[in-house]
Image 1: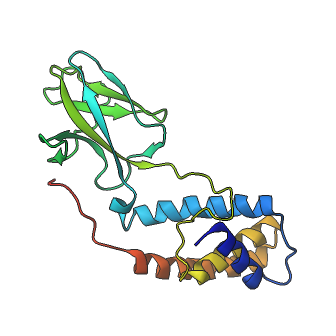
Image 2 (image 1 turned 135 degrees about the vertical axis):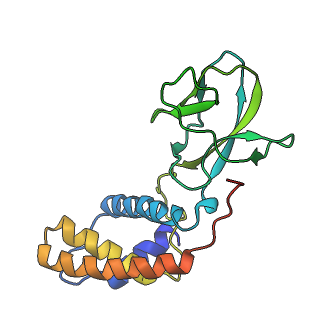
Image 3 (image 1 turned 180 degrees about the vertical axis):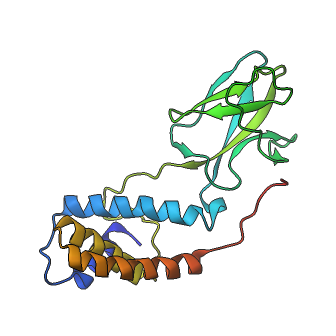
Length: 201
């Protein structure tokens, strides 16, 4: 569903008791909904979002930088992995190690800034794969694609109406809209869910 599709649907489904909103406010709402949608979908189809970055680990060097679109590593299948000769992840991710420089096992930690710190200090050079969930690009134009399929109109309808009721502080109607949105969200996730493809844990 494009931004233009979403705007047209909002006008069709908008509660008549609520005034029209500016394009700028609509984009704010839609970007928030798109981010929320990603967070929900990551839980049911993580491999659709996970990106992979090759990290050249150097003996004696502890700090490395994740790609600029790094968001988090909260989904199944994310983390820092050793790789085979083809650069593909093998086994499970390295353990999170916050400060134990004396650990016999190589671990790491990652900061919100995207700095990856190897703990303990690497004793050999090797290539690793860093798998992560990326930030979404901001929706700015009518042709930008959201994460919401065109066949999920009720999901968009109740989400936007809930945001509008909250924006205009219509608390009674907001509760009612929120209940409908919760049901639409459940249906949406059930339809989108897939069995995740994970590496050998």
